[in-house]
Length: 452
Image (cartoon, rainbow, N blue to C red):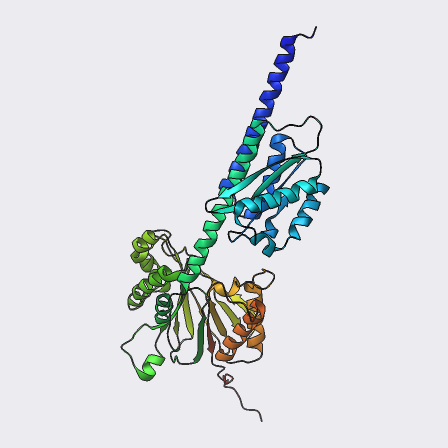
């Protein structure tokens, strides 16, 4: 027999299940708030969570920019025809009409009347998404179900969802403000001067090769670095041209003035280390050891490709600290290869080891050093330039017999076409081209009986 106690127990069980469900919904929304990186994805959840918490028919979220304009791209609603119709009407509103309303209260009354009229006989509960200093938006939850009523618990739940939404909008506003400040900081002339002083103002004369180099600055100040360092600076004239030269390409992880200052520090350390005459792997090992403490304090790392070239033997020795491997076009085979060697980032591990490799360059070979600002440059669609496009462009230029300077110009022209003439790079793009002179080699003479 069904008793009153059975009915009471069933009611309590139902309430307990509802509380657990609501707690899980709010916990999920809180987790999304803590971990979200995309504001739109978070705002998509808001109407759905609000509707489920109170078991309503639907919900919609109206959001504003901090200057009072309707944020049309962020209008969100649950899946129903009535919500879709309300959204269509809201999108059609004129911004000037909304901004002419005197104060937040007038704006709220205007929106509430417009939404209530669109929803007809439905019971509507509305609450503000109140951000500090501005009206962030309005959250509407509605239902036409018979017997539906707004309890105090329902109201508190919807208000909690609105408050979490306000936190998300404020956080996004802070992020956007920080980005604006960073963009201004990147334009500081001090950073530009630091970076300009790092890079050689001209390429040196090295026997048997052509050199061309350029750093294309982005809107921001970056940490790109390339250098040409004589291993025996005391030599002069022809002896200096025929001596061994270090060719270096690097990049500090991070942007702005701090990256430029760190690269200035590393440049001085590296130039001193080159004078030791050690092989490339040892030079990177010692540089890493010397820079470890400074990089640890700054929480930054450096990628660096170090090589040295002996013009008399056409021998290139190299080591890599996790930098983009240079590309080499072999004239004899007409193919592009990557020059890489095992090694960690500078500053990552105190006693890191770096392997040394070597090869001989042949007449007509072309070597291309570059930074990730080239391969990670984005086009109109958001697609990156990537290494494959760089390889294709390099092959095309080399096969045409272009000089080092012409190859450099053609590669930047290809990059500019990809990025777009009216768009700026997001990171510095640096290229260094080394081309071995196409010397004429005489055939080897053999001795033997003369033909009669």
